[in-house]
Length: 161
Image 1 (cartoon, rainbow, N blue to C red):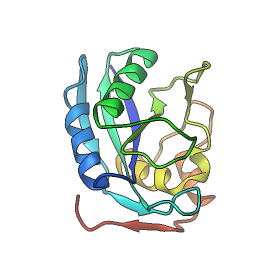
Image 2 (image 1 turned 45 degrees about the vertical axis):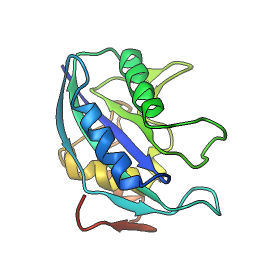
Image 3 (image 1 turned 135 degrees about the vertical axis):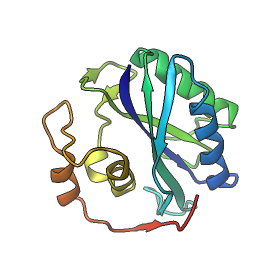
Image 4 (image 1 turned 90 degrees about the vertical axis):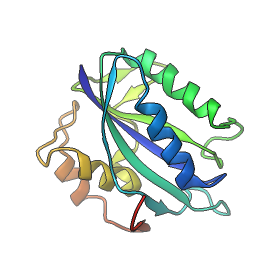
């Protein structure tokens, strides 16, 4: 079993409910154990003119291989109405593998650590709620360093989930 951190986001069809449903689905993954979820945060979309996103990070311990997990996460997205029309477009649910144990993964379908996570406060701050303070990514960067270089800007921590 490896500890895996999954970024979650939604800006359509009751985003907080989309995340709650995704958490239930993650808890049902085969050969896996749900380990926790951060608070929910709201952030602006990367593209102007879209609704604000609700984001969180979940942790699971899993024996699934990376592409098996990716397939399972994409099935959850589809089950919750995800349609892929445009990159960074509005979506009912986005599930991204941020970290997969100590692995560096670079395949056409999956890159871990997740690309650009270092520049996304809506990923780093929820991740910091779940990960140990001493977390070092497989590429050698520390979570503490990433947080220091990515200010808490444009984020609103929601009072409850």
